[in-house]
Length: 77
Ligand SMILES: [Zn+2]
Image (tube, rainbow, N blue to C red; front, side, top):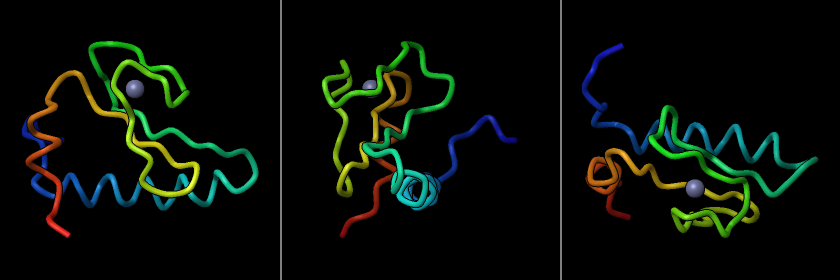
């Protein structure tokens, strides 16, 4: 693994969301959490990071560390 965040982080997130959507069908809502973040997240939409609901019942949490990288990694729609 590289130390650098991949430019295709948006793709990584998309893949995570696809998995989450499949897994969430039974459990929902599903929360996609950043790996190795500096602060623990809680699996609710009231988390400190103000998670984004990207699909029905699928929430993507924003990393405390590297938030700028996340923003930069998003693709324009
Ligand atoms: Zn969070």
